[in-house]
Length: 255
Image 1 (cartoon, one colour):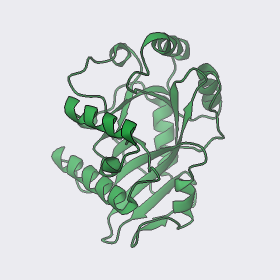
Image 2 (cartoon, one colour; image 1 turned 60 degrees about the vertical axis):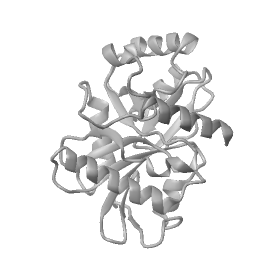
Image 3 (cartoon, rainbow, N blue to C red; image 1 turned 45 degrees about the horizontal axis):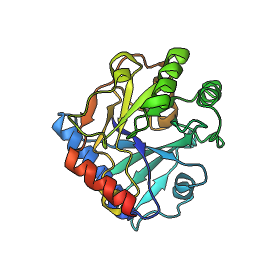
Image 4 (cartoon, helix red, strand yellow; image 1 turned 30 degrees about the horizontal axis):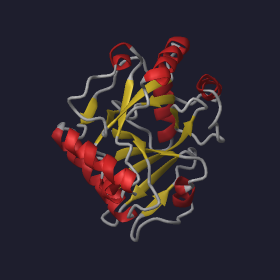
């Protein structure tokens, strides 16, 4: 299964465009890799209180013609089906901002808000909850003091289950962060910006989950795999160009 590991459904997004584009993008990427047709996946890394995953699970807020089915044994996953019968796996997640300003993602669960705590404490808490933790790249967020903090966190964690994140907004041609070369595995995702033009971005960039995913326990299987991951999984898609990056940043600040 091809999975976009960092997704947001922002309030201004047209959800019909978002979900249809995600299914299209994942299907196109699978075809380009020569994979057989099948559902792709999105990890919905919501800020606490956003509530999109819970609304979809209750059958609320879905575009017309879309349906959601929760596996009885896995409360952190939803199988979404579009009007034509295509499926899309949605896995829960959370995004927190530490006291130092670093973003941290929890994948495959919906823990209580950890925002505002020191980054090391957030990682320790997620470890005790047996949730994979991702430190995602962001423009300007891994330089200076925060960059030194990141390196210290990686040196201090040194265990499976603490991962790095790349996103489609990091322009190709930019220098590769040093921790991508000598740090833990990197999980790519699109990390759509809160601008209307980004509603069709999901599913363009991600990683390949290289085993059969059980329909009854999809989030649990993915979570367990990530907690043990030590090697870099295959990546699909590509990042944006410098012009597109600059254009999105201007739209973000103008909004």
